[in-house]
Length: 551
Image 1: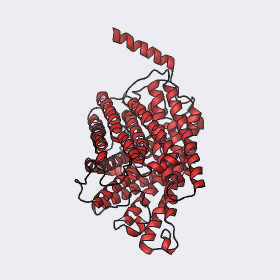
Image 2: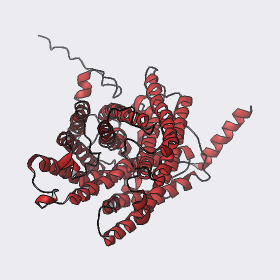
Image 3: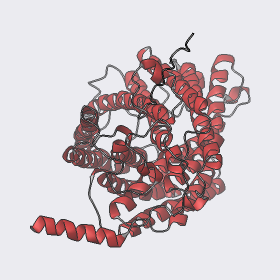
Image 4: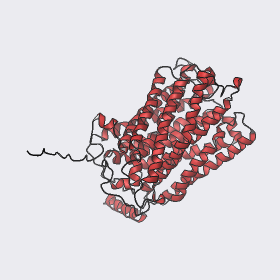
């Protein structure tokens, strides 16, 4: 009797080789979970963007003549805010690029808890589907801030369901942050000391601290809203001993640090792109690393600057104003160090670099106007006007979305193994930058002149600036849609990127594109500092290119 033949199958060559739906939905590979997040956040981005488009069309004219009622407008801007913040901006860079890259960057085969990583995506999807369901079957009219007493006593919309959706999604953030922290502490390759970590990892580590420490406060806040609405427990209702201002304290204690959950990962992306395309070691590595942690700490101390007109004491307002100025210091350190890295660099203006430069410009404008809002007197003048809308869009959209798109273009060859058409990439970066500024810069003027935010109608003298803003939004929309097409079309080509098309440093560029299932074929040992770019080599490359060009 002969033994049955044993068929030994070759292991998959790369993580994209299996195409079955089951292999994707049950995957524990951090790279595939990152792709699942990429598809999901893209869908939510365009849903939230469609809501923004309707709002801008409504605001083309002073009279409300696109949407049927002011109530419909209220529901629209609420769902725009909820979807963009909780289902796109918060998870975009950490859950997509962080999931895909963090283990590769530290020389690990996967995250510390692969199954929990997949669970975080399912939890996120449950919350996201609830958000879409709410949008279709009634909506919410409270604004994404859910301020009491309107949300607990007066609104007749689906506040409780929205609160539950946000509550569920928060667990996804906590699971992702916990996974990143444990992974960085326990799974670094031999030789990968803390000061050999890429700055991408430092920023995601700081972001994860905020996720784990701050998100539970948001979860408690929205649950208290649900309890107040359902059972009238008297937490926020002053008639039965509650305090509506308490909700603002709880909400902003999370939501101001949440701004850094969105922006710190953007810093991470820019800190990788700038030295690569300037061909220089990054200036002030340790300052940038410590600045990330400092931002995470200071972020928890400044929530009161959102409440200057809430009736809090003058002394509390002064302290929060001073602390808000202090949080600008670590942010300024980063901008200064990026600029110093660019100085005398051998600059290449490929698509990721254009997005990174756009990020620095837009974030700087957002940061400087943030200092104006940190000032008590100015904040009282422009509070709840379009000045505030413009400021936070410069930070959260001009910053985070520019960095996200820059990161997608930078690591797309690694993710997919394909190169995209560079000319289309540069065009999209240009359209996004021009469209963004034309959309939101007029809103600084609108706010300074007194146009309040969240209004369905406005005075006729504000129309010119609103028309400019809507025209800019049209350009911006084209800039956002373009990458969707040319990146997807690039998938039809054979893998042509090679392992390191940008000549970048970092462990992720030492493996093939796309990476294999287990990332590294051999154990990794790190023996050098990050960002070992050589200015002399860049000079030689430049001289060679010039000779070829002149010939």
